Length: 96
Image (cartoon, rainbow, N blue to C red; front, side):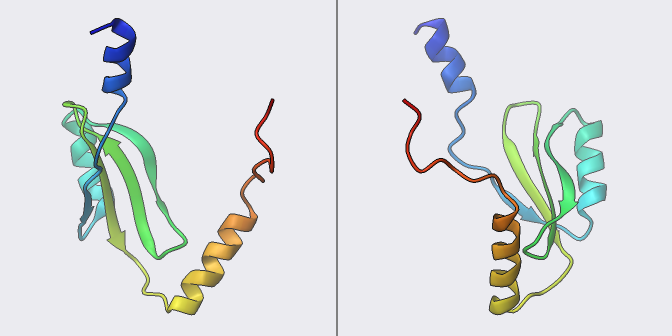
């Protein structure tokens, strides 16, 4: 296998397990102390979770969250619309 193919496989992840825990900040801190690296820092997210992503020393990615707020479907849709309206616009046509 070529070095280029090997590198591509290192960056390929088929799954990212998601864990709901009582205290995401505590679990993240312990994982980092054990050698994990932060891919997305823990933050409060629009869908009602405190959420972050890390990668363990073996290369496995983990999503870890704590539910901080239960939302109705309407609240979730409103927050998703607000979040999406703040994101950069994608071009309509691919760059040539």
